[in-house]
Image (cartoon, rainbow, N blue to C red):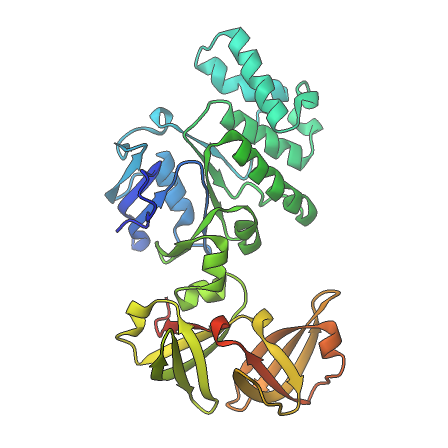
Length: 371
């Protein structure tokens, strides 16, 4: 089933893809639409199928079943060099013995395009990535970020319908990677080309993407904007993989409009908003997910207007100039994490009894599946 709800024809449509490597199922009847001009990220842990998906789109792998469409045309059996896509790899794969200009020009020259057009298009791409001044330098004379931008220019100069990016920032240091996240998004907007990025880095996906497809065990658990996927995860896996989350299991007691009240073993009643009502209609046991940054913490047993749990502080960790992470041992013996402002944590010590609470709108009520 397609995830496309916009009504527009997707530039990429993946329909029921399956792929096995021996006894290992890399893809399991995967469906996904990628829209024209968007920046979509395939996010997931190692072995979830994201790189296999990218390679199938690019034509480097053939699926065991299912079809791939580009611009409405079935390209499942089309070789990679005849597909309107290009790929940027983590290694960049620049030719070390020729200049940045010649690296970018290589594909155009192989296509026997006129020299005057080659020169114009190459300089336009180098200007776009901010490296016209480095046209004569060889790769070893460029920084890691500059090499990455040359690799982007080399891929974009051929004017593909879709650009595939296989963890292109993975070899950069933290500070340069943060800078290149913003650079890459700006380049994508300027070029107007559909980007499909593969990464396991949650922050990278949230920073750059228009939409994120969270992959798990060869299929897509959820597709949506970064805000949608983070704030309203549809599965326990998505909630746990994209950021931090506390999980509480319980059984539904009753419903009140949009909200449901859940009885959690030894913890009392918790009210939250279902993420997917259709899932909960047949569910008795559910999982509640609460982000640590959505929690308020007070010393002692303090009345709360919304969901409240009681416990004792087991650990206080420094996580930045403004925040502290509290680890609280609840009455049922489980651990619960809360991210609170430093000034709110200054009066707390390990062993103190505390009340943690949060608003029902911040409570994601999920089905009880482990996916």
